[in-house]
Amino acid sequence: MGYTTVLHQAAAVGDYDLVEEIMKKKSCDPNQKDLVWNKKTPLHRATSRGRSEVFRILIENGARACLRTDNGWTAAHFAAGSGRLTVLRLLHSLHAPVDKKDTSGDKPVRIAEIYGHEDCVHFLEKAEIESRNYRQMVKLNGLPLDDTDEEWEQERKEARLQEKTSN
Image 1: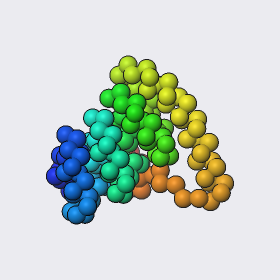
Image 2 (image 1 turned 90 degrees about the vertical axis):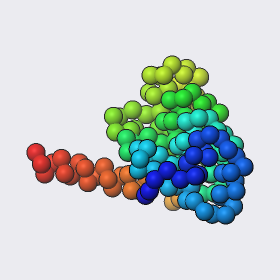
Image 3 (image 1 turned 180 degrees about the vertical axis):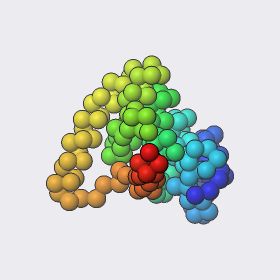
Image 4 (image 1 turned 60 degrees about the vertical axis):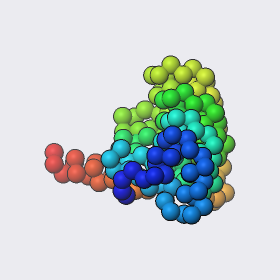
């Protein structure tokens, strides 16, 4: 965990060349969560702005699309909220989670509804079913699937436990 990196900034502005250079040098972790900006990763920053080429280079260099911000948003939440259908399609094609609930119980499809991105809503309604079917197939066949932010899940578990003990 840390703070905003040059990679976060380059991803946000869509500086493909700089992102590529950073990734080649391996000078920044593509999964670094920014404590100042709600634990956003460079992928979150690129996704919310529809930077599909930056998204691609981050993914190719180990960025995990399942990582969550402090409020539970995945890359799909950011893409849905900003109406980035191309990025949602990319996420879905990579079997990234497009149907996880955030801390308020909202899935990306609900975020797209709130912001009026009907094309994203229609896509996500179908993608959720396909994702659920894919996860079932993976589970049945014992295959690996990177769809969980373990650190975030642990933090949520600890927060729920703390709530129970303080009540």
